[in-house]
Image: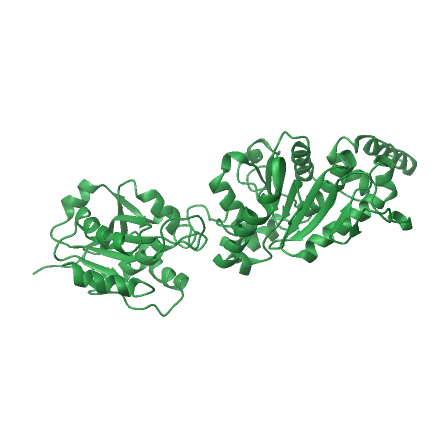
Length: 487
């Protein structure tokens, strides 16, 4: 067993080695600049990815890590100071959901640069007024901005939604652009963050700029989700879930499936309790999967499948009915431009068969021309009814279809409950295997949306699925068609 003097000697040697390695290795810098820092394997991994970004091996990096696992300590509080130590001319912007949080990171960086430990390895990186020294004319320093003396390098802290006018950026860091679930689940707020990213942040980047995002995934349509949907090939994504789901994290670790990420701080027992309390939220925040595997309110494997030939063989004269959720806008960028959704469904005995579902971005004239064609193409006949919710332009669609076509058009009742509540009410029908999907290329788009709800960016299929199930079971709901005896 080592004596106390031997332990002190080993610790001193460790400090010497960390100091030697800190300028060229970011992971060593973390331990040197804060002697009490205890780096876990995933902290070192994150640091290594950050260094790859600094060195240009990675251009755009997203790091998805559970809450309270030290991601901000590494990236927002320490990475900028290490980068300035190696390249004082860098122009770095640090962004977060609030100006106060962003300013707090800025002040942390300034205190680090002023420290004796930092100056002993990076003596040429200086900021104004260090340790009570006089200010150098022409160089600024306050809580949200500071210059690196003798260079054009600077750090700018900004809250998401605020301006960066006139600020060119070499490295842009975004640390959680949303504060909480209320913001993350708000389509209006998500659109506001998306607009800020496109009209403010990205306009300050140049060809060699790098972006570094650290986020806790709240929603599949959050900023990271939108970026990855539009330009996935441009980003490196490091995902580290709280509970291991793939052996060795796919080669990143030595963890086994089911192991906690940081058991000393967040035990598996604690994580499982959190998962039990709020499974959908746990999947998003802790596992970095905004959509629960298999589905949220409804699961993919609850839906039965049937071929079109088998469906035709069992169908006698049961009519196919249609359900429409209307929207005005053509397809554009942005989640507030919702498509219309239409679904074809039929009830045979006590089961519901969905023949087809489609999202369409059509304005009124095109939508009116489209609907009769769609109905004919999907087994519609004179007995078919087109159900339309009388919301927004739905009333106008109903009126114009009645005036210009021979379709049987019916307004669905105005809902009184929240959309999620309504969908949960009909979900048992799906869970017990009463809803069949007629095989076709449309199924994947349909399941992706319905099984992601309420975390999906659009929900037109959710509405019309609920309408169809309620409508087709409205009459004779208590009759067991499978066991009825005919005398």
